[in-house]
Length: 254
Image 1 (cartoon, rainbow, N blue to C red):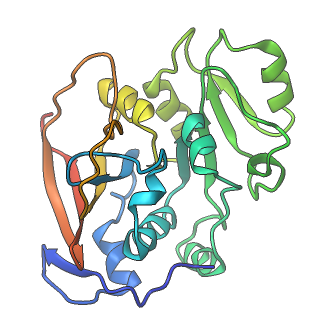
Image 2: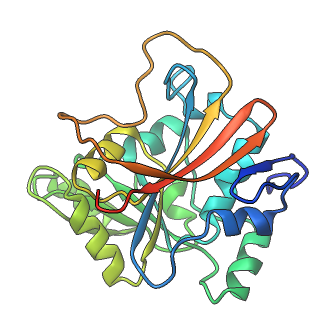
């Protein structure tokens, strides 16, 4: 079922407005036209936990789900790491009928392309992620990935090597752009975010700040071998009850 548009979300900044509708939310989160752009979307608790019981979905509520689903609507491609696909129980990337109607009215194909990132190719070609996909997915991997898995997945997806032993985020973006998929909506996980951040390949972060303290040993939204300080500029602040939904874009010159 599509997300409920009755879940109230107020825009605090810029241009404050109460109970904004889907059209206004889409304007708030609009991709820049006519250029490649990669957005990361995450949720975290107040103390920085990215999961509850090993799933990010455990932190979200109806407002977060509403925005989560809407952010896919204008995307040319939805990019996700294979670990997140397995942990979060992803099925085929299929938008709702209302999303298809919006996309058709805006000159977009009915569905975005599902792009997955994996060094090991530990993905089941018989999974509904592939067998029920409305558009043939793209799988980004490495030269060192097992040949038998590459052959099996090639039956159900375009398998593209973009590095010898590590996926090169810049090559992922370049390949997507070459396919005409410039507006990329990425949903993690933390290792993918960390790698793309280190490569300077992240233009935007949409972060839901869940009003909870989790403790425990949950990770953070970005994980990489080294630090990559990247200045960001606040683009929008929305609120639903005690939850904040924040949009940041890369600061000029960073």
